[in-house]
Image (tube, rainbow, N blue to C red; front, side):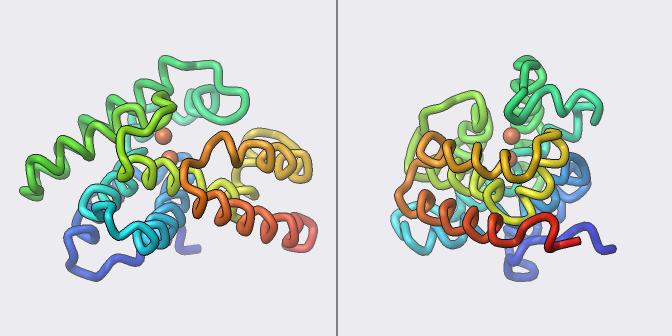
Length: 204
Ligand SMILES: [Fe+2]
Ligand SMILES: [Fe+2]
């Protein structure tokens, strides 16, 4: 099975180039699936917020989780999800993400000012609960939204060891907490309704 879904960026665009550099870091924790889905949510949000800067939002979405590649897989599950206790490792994936993203963006001669803003967003994308800007709000929303999709629900309920029905019920309670923009809130409800409609049993 082709595991890497890729992103729907223009071939040979700068986002495509960033993504190709990120790919070796995304083959862990289902981050390849996560990033392809979150990239699409980012595109939809950017269409609704033309005042946001896609040159910040797209690279931040593509690169925000590259730091997980530096965490051994057996340690990852203690550092994210409903039972996350290992706050040190959670923070480590952010700081490693900043380091790797800076290397990738600098290597592509990306605009220096934009690199600063992208790195500030990546640094704290999970541990900082407030958003720094509209760009950051859209990154945070795109990051969370994939969890509500059928693919996100299937992956997460299994790896967290929570029954699918209980997991979708819990997700419902997190929508207002996690999402910043009203549009993302609506997208989360729509995606979760779809995930509930397609039950795990139907898919087998
Ligand atoms: Fe993360
Ligand atoms: Fe993420």
